[in-house]
Image (cartoon, rainbow, N blue to C red; front, side):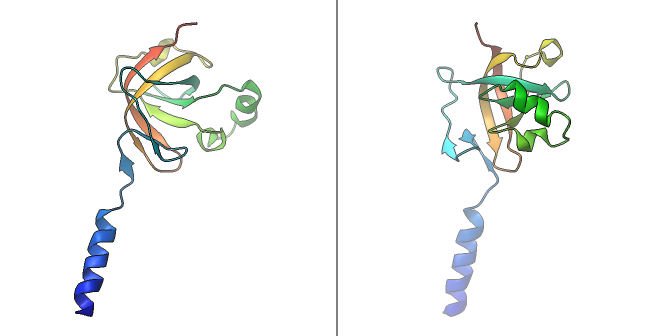
Length: 126
């Protein structure tokens, strides 16, 4: 009987954890409404490569300068998330640091540092 109870607890515990969640804000683990009517607004902090950039809801040039030399800027800049844009038509080669964008997330990974895949990215109107 004890074996059955322990086995059930282990089975339930193993099934309830996952490091990948759809539409989750990794800064506070609350659901993110990233539908067509509600993208997340923020800024391009740094273009990493053709498909990846560092995104944050705020842009602070002094913080960016402070951490820009660090290899782990994505973990030091507040609320920053690495965005994979490979599934969008967004051209990162034409973007610059500080550009205001709107991002719709396909999913995010609850890891450190946070990462997400975008389903759509647009330049925010000034």
